[in-house]
Amino acid sequence: MDSLLIEGGVPLRGEVDISGAKNAVLPIMAAALLTEETCVIRNVPNLSDVRFMGRILASLGAEVKIEEGTVQLRAARIHGRGDYELIRKMRGSVCILGPLLARLGVAEVSLPGGCVIGSRPIDLHLKGMEALGGVAEIKGGYVVVRVGELVGNQIFLGGRVGPTVLGTANVMMAAVLARGRTVIESAACEPEVVDLATFLSSMGAKISGAGSPTIEIDGVPALGGTTHDVIPDRIEAATFAIAAAATRGEIEIRGLRCEHIGAVLDKLKEAGVPFQRGEGSLRVNGADAFRPVDVTTQPFAGFPTDVQAQMMALMTLTDGISVITERIFESRFMHVSELARLGAEIAIEGGATAIIKGGRPLSGAPVMASDLRASAALVIAGLVADGRTDVKRIYHLDRGYERIDEKLGKLGGRVSRLRET
Ligand code: EPZ
Image (cartoon, rainbow, N blue to C red; front, top):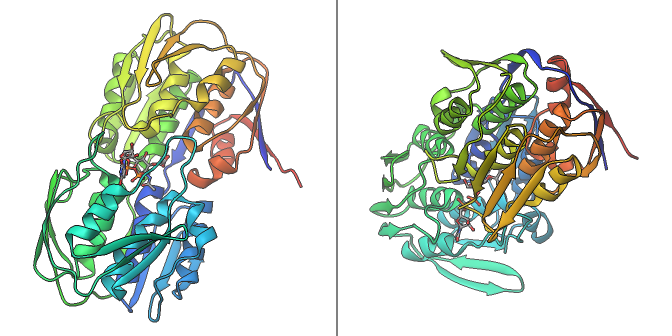
């Protein structure tokens, strides 16, 4: 398993281009199952999750061609039984459920296993499928959903912690071919949901309200092929902004949409991080000292849970006490124990709240990545820590950050990848 070797203490300087959004491209790739015509998806990041989703779609019978930055998909002749071992390995694969049901009237997906950040249930996904007329059963580790005809309905998709992003995606992708109107209440408002709605509309779907808590979909008899450019990855952009601030560098982040990271910019401002917003760009400088801030993760447009770990790494550098409350996932603090190896002082209270006592200098050490965003937090801390940090198991990182070692290297970061045979 590869590791990243990081020599800390070097301010990041220069320009970095943001790649396409992983969490937009995965459901959009699944949406290509809704038509037998060819779909071309551009500005696709070179990530292991994208290649993995390609394998899943190919296992369903779709023709998949992935070249640098572009995915071409044609689901002319497909079946509805996803490969058990493939699907259970990636949560994002659950979003083949809606399109398979809409296209074939049957979908068999393995229950997406839990992961280090929580149990990851799909009860709301199934609630949506059943509201549209589907009948779901669990058989041999598979969820099997069948339907004679999908019929539009009024569906409340709010769960115990609020909306579901991929649940909203699944219901949208089933409803676009249902008979009549579907209204999703308490829909997720994330930009990735809006990008999926844009993709579906370009295929001929009739969708309004995407980006708001109420989405209306009028079913159509069939959808056609299309070409689509994926939105920039707001989580990658936020990660680089925090890395620039933490290393007290000065970087220009290009190709992002600042309105997609408003809550993150608000907290960076409160922490005393100097930045200038441009048209599709963001210049971030370091600061001699940061102020401690309190953060609570929320559904969009609140502070994103996918930036919680990275913000925690920054808060270890402040002179004071910061409080981070994770409201979206039940155990998304795997990075805390690893940050402690670098000298951070963080206490977890009641499972959902981390109290960060900043100010103690970080020193390099071997650390273990556990999930995608925790890995990013360890990289940020390693860039600041005195000496060398060895971040192991960075396959987690490669799932969601395109060539992060090269991008950091171009910014002057002393980062090298150790390939372990
Ligand atoms: C998407 O996951 C993202 N993944 C996650 O990003 C992101 O953290 C998450 O949305 C929240 O924003 C992709 O888009 C591929 P949810 P998703 O359904 O859709 C509960 C990353 O690092 N819930 O919005 O799976 C669930 O347990 C990843 O890029 C139910 O209870 O998340 C969680 O507590 C990590 N029942 C909350 O809702 C359901 O049926 C939000 O989950 C579905 C979800």
